[in-house]
Amino acid sequence: MTLTTPQTPDVSSTPSSAPAASVASTSTSRIAAAFARRAQLPKGRPALIPYVTAGDPSPTVTVPVMHALVAAGADILELGVPFSDPMADGPVIQRASERALALGVGLRHVLAMVREFRQTDTTTPVVLMGYANPIERMGQATFAAAAQEVGVDGVLVVDYPPEETVEFAALLAQHHIDPIFLLAPTSTTERIQAIASIAKGYVYYVSLKGVTGAGNIDVQEVSERITTIRKHVLVPVGVGFGIRDAASAAALGAVADAVVIGSKLIQEIEAAVAGVPAEQLADVAARAAGDWLRTIRHALDELPPRAVITETRISA
Image (cartoon, rainbow, N blue to C red; front, side, top):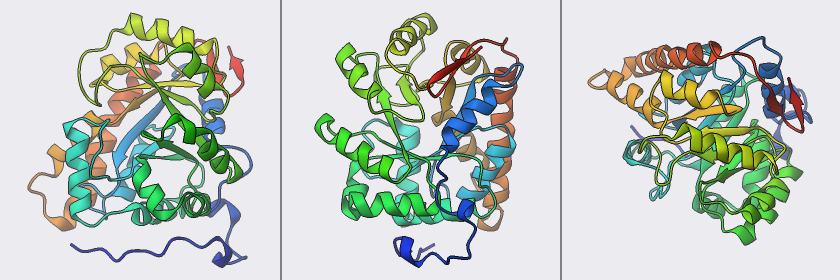
C-alpha cells in the first residue's frame, strides 16, 4: 500500500464556513475539560489514556481504532508519530513504528488522521507523542500551526534537550496546544520544578527505568514519587510504562490521576490482525482495541472515590 503525502495544513486556507470546533482547538483546553469531567464522577476517577502508533497496522485502521477506544472509555488519546529510532520505546512500539514507516506514514499523514478524527469527535483530546526529528524537518512553527488547525490538543516530544524545551513549550502555548512532559524516577527536584513552570494538560510520569513495556512496577515507589511531584506540579500526573493488565492499571490508578497504556494495547491489536485480509483490518483492529480497553476501564471504574488533580485545583 502506498500513501499520497498530504500537504501540510494551511490555517489561512480553512474555509470560514467550517465549524470552529471541527478543526482548531478551542480556548478552553480539551485536556483540562477531560480531567474535570472525570473528577466529577462518583467513582472511576483516574483518566484512561491509551496510546497507539499512527498508521499501524495500516493507515486505514488508525481513525477507526481511535473511535473504538473512545467508545470503550478512553478520556484522552495519545497518537504516536512513527520514527525510525524510537529510543524510549520497547520492541512492541518499535515494531509498530517500523510497520507504519514501511507503509510511508509520516508526520503529515498523522496530522491528516487527526483532522479525519475531528470530523466526528470534537470533544476527546488528542496528544501527539514522538521525537524531535520529524518536527524539526517540518519546522517547529509550521508544525505548531498545522497541529492547532487539525485539532491537536497536546504534544509530547521525548528527546528535546532542556535548553529547547521552554522555547518549544511557549510556541505550542501560542497555538493553544498543551506541552506535555515526561518525568522519570531519576528526575531531580530542579528538573521537576522546571517542568512545573511550563507544563500544561498533564505530566507523564515514567513508572520504570528503561523503555516502554518493560519490567515490573513498584507501586509504593511510584506513589512516593507522585507525592513528591505533586509538591511542585499543579497539573494532573499520569503514569505509564509497564502497565500490562487491569490489575496493574488499577494499582497505579489508585495513586495517579491518569493511567497511560500503550505497548500491551498494541500487542492486542497486533495479535488480532495477524493473517486478517486488508479489507477487514479496520473492523478487527477496532474491535480488539475496544474490547481490551474496556477491561482496563472497568478496573479503574471500580476504584473508590478520591481527590484528583484537575489542572490547578483539587477536586475531592
